[in-house]
Length: 130
Image (cartoon, rainbow, N blue to C red; front, top):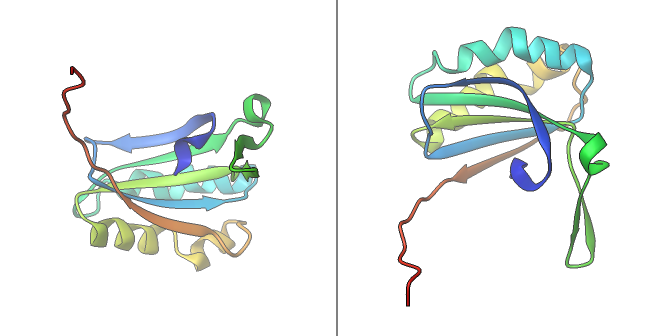
């Protein structure tokens, strides 16, 4: 997920925390970020069951593009990540396909092959006292 490194929010639209996140990770340039901010980000929360959307950029001055080592491998971070919050997996997936299709992304200047993922958030309350 996107929170492995240090990043800065480039855009956010959110009504509340969703229970499912759809993530899109890609390498980009300033023109693509501007197109995402203008064309896609404001429209996410108008879609059914979508509760928020966030565009974050990796801050390489803080991470050097590397989130660290894990089990002997280097973890490299994408330039940007778009996170879509929704109340169910189908809504998160459909929003990403509608507003961030491969055709739209490449027309805005993205390299082909964005990495997509779907994650369910779970919360629990636990007693830590023994």
